[in-house]
Image (cartoon, rainbow, N blue to C red; front, side):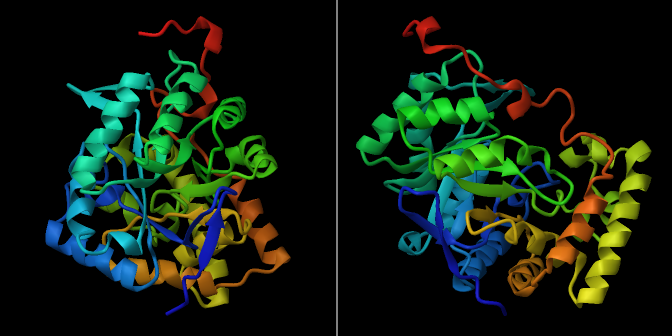
Length: 339
């Protein structure tokens, strides 16, 4: 198996494995929760294989994914870099986003308990609350750093202007964003902003939510309670078109002697030494395949060929009701009245 290796994430001192593990699908959104025993075994296998950067959130479950990681990390806390997030709340089937100081603090305390740890290595605001100036949210997160409850601060799905404003309050270590062969909208503004400020880039869904590693079986096999069924790119009017892109990726992968998923993941790894993809999986076999992507070397010509295919993807990243960096700027701090 390929060596995973280590990388510096951002410029504040955090070091992580060069590939991480997204844990969401073990507990939420992609069908029913998977057996706890199997998922703990998977997490242990990842750690033993050198994948030590583990990504979760309080909304996965909600809460059950953090509880799972808490159990899996007993006796192994010092071996991993643990990232979790706050800000998304599901209540009675409705989503709410909160970034007010009282909630930031309460969410952190609750995550620490569920994870059974004294400190979170990387704490992200999962989505930006457009009612609260980002300076106010980050100000409270800065206090959590000073108190030793978290080590580093991150943002997820934040706009370039939000990232700049946040970074002025306290250095941002990482921005988590969707980046893959079929999700490249962050390249225009957000990724250059992160690089200018020395902020690490954590790429979630680097396999196109499984589409780029599915061998075309994914669409037919999605369970009824899988959130991807609502995603535009998985709708019938877009699927046939997007399948053709997969087939072309598959052809290049066959030429290279790797799987299409490994090829897609290798493309993300080739974006730079400041990028850490966090593919999720619930199977040890797939985890091993993902690690194998680190051994796939791509030429400039192969990168260009892959990128030309990706330009043809049909459908938006998310349903129109989901908040992303495109619609999540916050008010000016002068408008904030402390609650």
